[in-house]
Image (cartoon, rainbow, N blue to C red; front, top):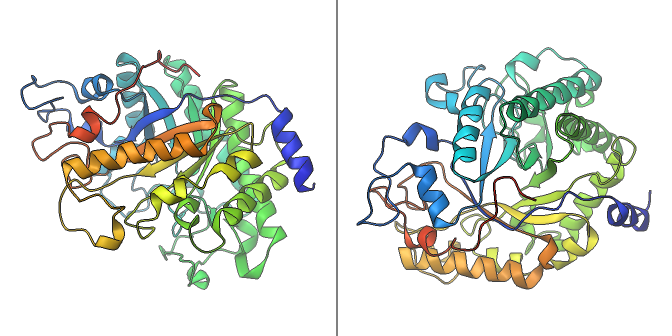
Length: 391
């Protein structure tokens, strides 16, 4: 299918429109509820989800691992929050506090990112793409069904996390794949979703797309109104490498390969990671350059799936965007990012941003070391809110 046909398909398809997110990924937050969270220094201690709601947060991305640490790479007691039961518990908190849930499926028992997309331990012996796709579809369907059954359906489902180089491509050895060391990966190309595997082009895209399609099918079968998002770290490369044209071409290539497997729009949202500390301080310029991506996929929402900025600590000048690593600088970054997205994207396609943090109270957290909301959260997220889950 040519590019013009793909664009026509996306334009004509019925899209699941999303609101503009000013959200967070604080997946570990439920483990910290005993901390003294406050909206301001003089405010009383409150439930952290209430603090987020009162600050204006309207979306919360929650990571899900299949069976945390089942492969022995981490301590299950520390990371059980990311398992299915932990996700259900967070979803109940979000429902109670009028915050929409974005489900982030890693399809792994551990972190998934561009360099590591380890198959879950339970899937280690699956020896065909057909079997792997069936497992992806079933896991996605069951996860979304469980959320819907307790009255907390996600507003969107991310099929994979930062799947720039594919998904489900590390084997049992634990070797970490990188863009410069692809032969470290011990999977047979024919049984993984790794892109550009052993120099392959079309074949690897076809296998990868089959896995993505399985996740999309599982999500839509369980929740037809839930949006489906595809998340990569290509936001880091808008100002370098192949540029915005390369980003557009990646998603177009995926859309072409999904066309034979997915009815209607192949995906409803395009998510990009953008961190100043990883893109050499180019984040704001990259965000301002997203218009061609929105134009290529007019039925899709475009959003920043992960970002952050330091409110303290040591930071290299080249990892900043002109604002100091201070609470005021962090707030200025939030305002500037929102302005860049408003300028670059049509209002109906502006999916906003999600702030990622691993530990509350860290330098790049929206909470300070005393668990008080920093100005970036108190003043950077304020905006009119909608009801839970409203598209």
